[in-house]
Length: 85
Image 1 (cartoon, one colour):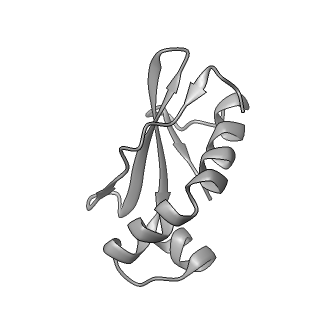
Image 2 (tube, rainbow, N blue to C red; image 1 turned 90 degrees about the vertical axis):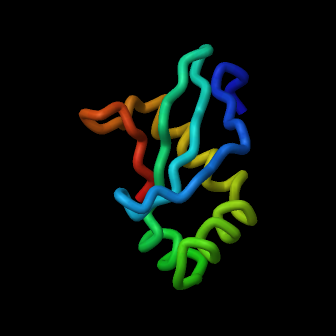
């Protein structure tokens, strides 16, 4: 794991985005990462935000590794958010 990228355990559901948003600290700067409930459901199951958050937490290491790869590749949107797909 790249020591310059850290993932604090501060994920939360965003009703507007219909996604779990979680921070990454990249060389001291915060980057927002996100994955939609639809993607969580297609990968792991679940049918509501509570189950998706629980499934996110169960699969945190895999999802953080994916987010790290996207961050390193510079794959953020025009708002600076890194979306897992």
